[in-house]
Image (cartoon, rainbow, N blue to C red; front, side):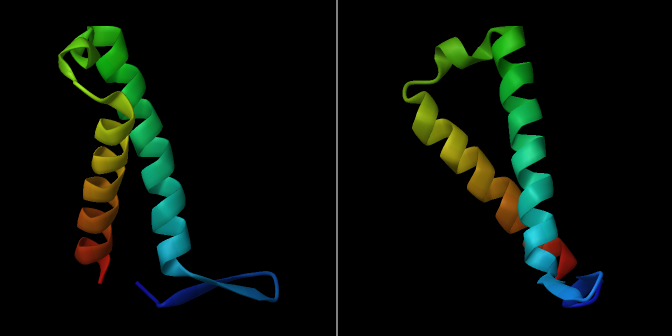
Length: 65
C-alpha cells in the first residue's frame, strides 16, 4: 500500500484511512459486545474501548506497513 493516497489534489497519509476504518470497526465491535451483553463483565468501559481501539489500530498499521 502506498504511503499516501490522493483525493483530488490533496495527499492524505495511509494511516488516516486506517484510523477511520479502525474507528468504524471499533464502533461496530462495541455495539456488538453491548448487544450480546458482554460489556457487563468489563470493569472500566471507557478504558476498554480505548484499549480495543489501540489494539485494532496497531494491528492494522503493522499489517499494512
